[in-house]
Amino acid sequence: MRKFLVSGVLAALGLAGCATEPFGNYSNAPASYEKGIVADMVTKLSTDYPPARTRLNLEQATPDLLGVTLVASLRAKGFAVAELNKPESAEEGNARDALRRAAHPFFFRAPAPAQTTVDMRYVVDQVGIDNLYRVTIWLGDKSLSRAYLAQGDSVTPAGMWVRKE
Image 1: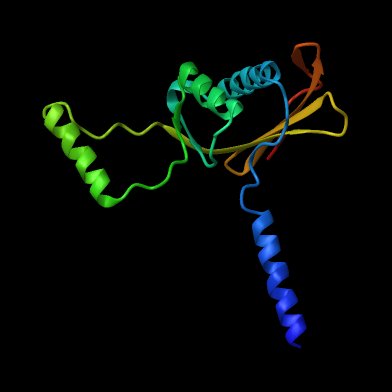
Image 2: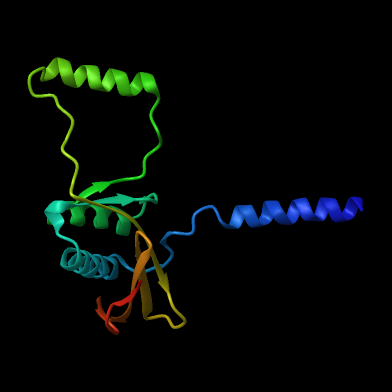
């Protein structure tokens, strides 16, 4: 009985460790491939969602080149992007707001909310063979997926965007 309990606890801890960050960039793609993938992702998002009227809540950390490029490209296109950051303490938030009010007492007001807010997550991974990559973007409860074929120094779409409602 004791061995069963110990093995059950160890199995639960092992599974919990595997599921910490299921989203992000899992490919070892060169920077030129990632830039092409990001450009296509931004084009698709701006086609489906109006950039100046959409706020994207990025629900994952973006520490790599692909994530940083994606956030910068979305903002350059006109999207409001809320990145996942560590929560600040109440004192830090109050001090920050006090400094803003002191610097601009007449102009300080809360920003107007965007008309549409969409929670966003993504996965970029390599599928099977060395030159095939897959992107999946989750927007709320919907997802978009597309495959890319690496040729030379760039990637080209290997098919249409697939949408799951």
